[in-house]
Image 1: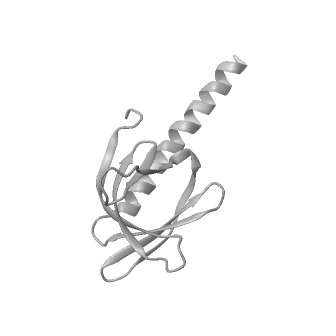
Image 2: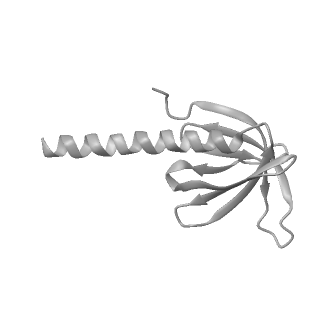
Image 3: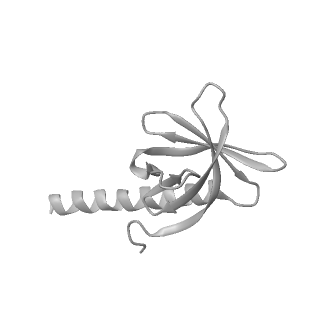
Amino acid sequence: MRSSGEVLREGELEKRSDSLFQVWKKKRGVLTTDRLKLFPTGLGARPKELRFHSILKVDCVERTGKYVYFTIVTTDLKEIDFRCAGGSHWNASITLALIDFQNRRALQDFRSLASAGA
């Protein structure tokens, strides 16, 4: 079983800004077993973290010639748009890590209920 916080993947992806012009900004992504960290291109800047307990799903995967576009939907139904190079498969990596996290959490919940009822 993987340990919490283990790095599964690292590389470049782009996030669409929330600003009026919605420009794509390059980020260095670090995917772990429990979150996606997004590091801005500037030095010393703090990363933003999307913890899996606050992610509902990865949605709206669309492929174009150069990019794969996808949306992360949070538990409060906020949508965050990303794109990555077509062959990088970031959307699949995030989806699989999220499913693994959700399965581990469901198993923990089941074990807690089983031990409480015993």
